[in-house]
Length: 489
Image (cartoon, rainbow, N blue to C red; front, side):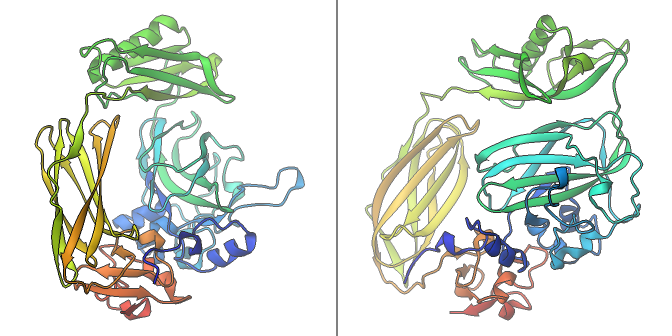
């Protein structure tokens, strides 16, 4: 029996044919991947309870809006692509049709008080991203009509190149809301996937209260937000972008020479000060009562004159590795005992930096049979206790440590022998870990009762991923309807 899932067998995986995608899109719940987190999508606010009567979107916001890529299409007589008009919010997935309802009072509005918006997404099962795009409704749009292409400006107001690599949850997309947009609007965020024919379409309902251009013709185009301490040798750069891409002319950077310069409030001030000294059409700082823009030791806003062509800034950190960081095993015991296939592995760790530590136990077939993650202070040398379910035999222990600032990773690997009794059933994941990868035949361990459950064949397999802590009707062995999704092994 194979002990791991074949990722290629999941419909949400790397299949690229239109036929396969059509099957995938016809089966709600078979691919759960991500949602717009900030500003929150309509479906995400359904899960949070701010939007009501949302149908299936309340339980699975990460699956809402998946359909074919290519929006809007139709250029030069080409066929329209992406979701059909009237079903842009749901992606045409029947389970989520409730979010297609549209009226001036139907949905909670998120207030936008700054035209510089850092969009970010939550990815529950990431696929490579070729790009993220953002469209906004036209001035004078009718909020009581179903959303269609004609509701939106035909030109996106922001585009972020994804590089066809896996996107990271919480990564910021620095965009600027156009000056002429105020009041109630709908923003359409699109995550285009690189390894399938799909894209994810998320709508966010907003009330734009932000100021437009400031006195003197200055428009907000971003922020310098000091959130991390830099070390000598690090660099930080304000990258300017125009409609034609990055502009070297208006991009400005500084280097960190000592610990004092690396303090967040100091490098933010220094970067803003250099921008103001070297640029005439760009300013960084905070406006005073006389509308002067001067740097502060904190968050500095970035402003641009129209003649610069600059529409947004991104702050890029070039951080050097902490060469003095150390992490390694302490004295790992050569043996750990199982009782009926269940036991615990004690993993002593020695580290000289504050780190997030991850320890994973693998059996001889390299199947994960135990995992834990915890934060540890510098020089605290904790012992991680990892619950395992496996059979006796040689096991690998993988240790990974990442410093708090994310700049340095250390890793180590050793073996330990699990002795004693076997008896634990094989499974692919511990519920609800890796929820987005559940397909027909997936076996999960339910920690609440210690039993293993197998996801039913299609069409019931779609229910296996419909779970949240507040809506657990299909949770294996627990939910009121779990028999519809799972077989107990």
